[in-house]
Every structure is written in structure tokens, then in C-alpha cells.
Length: 273
Image (cartoon, rainbow, N blue to C red; front, side, top):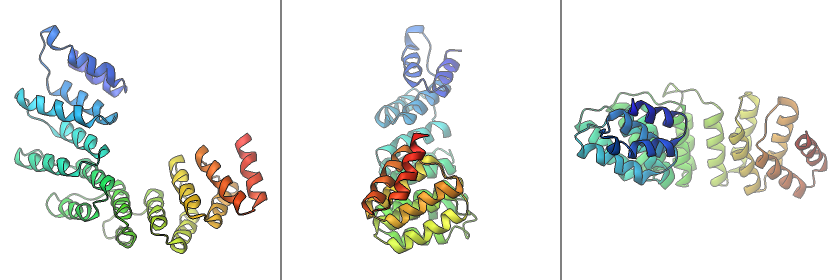
């Protein structure tokens, strides 16, 4: 069907084609259904077009199509890109009124909007609602987003509290939350805490992704923390840590300024291979 084609394009990350197919429905004397709306809104969210996502959701309502969980989640996810936390809360309130129950994805997307705006009190309040009203269990993304939200509000102590409560939340810390907290310590210029946690992170042998290495390198260069940069360099050499290209450049810059020629030479050699 035409709606299936729209959905297939969105899942194949061909969102412009998906929206073009969606816009062509009236010319084919076809009416959009919940599948085509969900796919189109998801495409907008994936490519950070929050205003268009909101318009499509409103259009669905006016067309007597009741939004489902996928449509709400996609719209809230799009709002997160623009840090539109108030709009996200309004949509969640609408979900409760229409008996569409939020899931963990809903809350994580709304929390991301609070993170973007540095609204850490709202993020913590949303965590309480998630656990008490919706009876949902936070996951690693929930905790990492909360840690970043607290840090962007310059509340590194709050970020550390969230990290320390992860066992109580039945969520074990991983590289995602470790990296998030190290960044927040950097924002608060708590370099000894950052270095200690970096040592713990590397000692646990987490398989970090490239973006994590970039975030850690940013912390090193922002604080001119060459000892931490040296730790990362040693992890590349001894633990097989993979570096984002940007991370490698930042570490070389920091270590060169700290007059650590051996480490610089090692990273440059790794770059050549």
C-alpha cells in the first residue's frame, strides 16, 4: 500500500522521499492513515524537524486520527532537539488524557529536552513521575540523560547523586554514564574527581564507542588535563581503546602542550595506520 511505501522509506532513512510520498496522497485520492502519519513524523524527528513533526501531529488530530504511542514519541523526540521541554510535557499530559500510556522511550525523549535546556529540576521531577505514576524502570539512557541535564545546569553534585543511585534504580553504570559524569565533573572543574572516575572507567574495560572517546578528549583539552590525556593514550596502547579522529587530534594537542613527545609520536603513528 501507499502507507507501507511511506513507512518503508522512513525506515530506510529516506525521509525526504517519505514526506514526498505522504504529500502526494491527496493527489492519488487517498487519505493519510495512522501508519503514514507515524512514518512521516518519525522521519521528521530523525532529521530534527520538530516544527514539521508538530504540524503533522496536529493535522492528524484534525483529520480525526487519534495519535498513537509511536506518533507521540516521535514528536516528543523532535522537541528534544530544540530543547522544547514545555511542549514535551504538554504532549505527555495529552497522552494521559487520551489513555495512551507513556513508555521509557517517551520519558527519555522528554528528559532529553530538559537536558538541552539545562532544566535539571524538571528532569529530576520527571524521573520521580516515571517511577511513581507510570511505574516504569529507568534504563541507562534515562540515567545518562539525567546526569547530563544536571551537569549542564552546573549541578555536578546532583549528577554524581544520580550516578550513585543507579544501583537503587536497578541500573548498573556503564561507559555511557561514566563518560557523562566525567564530562559533568569537567564542567564543574572537579578535575581530581574526573581523573579518578576515568581511571575507574578504563579499569572496568568498557567497550566505549567513538563518540565516548571524543567526549573524554574534549574534557582533557578544555581543562588542559594532560594526565588524563595520557591515560587515554595508554588505554589505546594497552587496552585497544578506539579513538574518534577528533579525539586523536585533541589528545595530540594537549600532550604536545604538556611536552609529552613519546605519547604524541605514538598517537601520530596510530593515525597513519
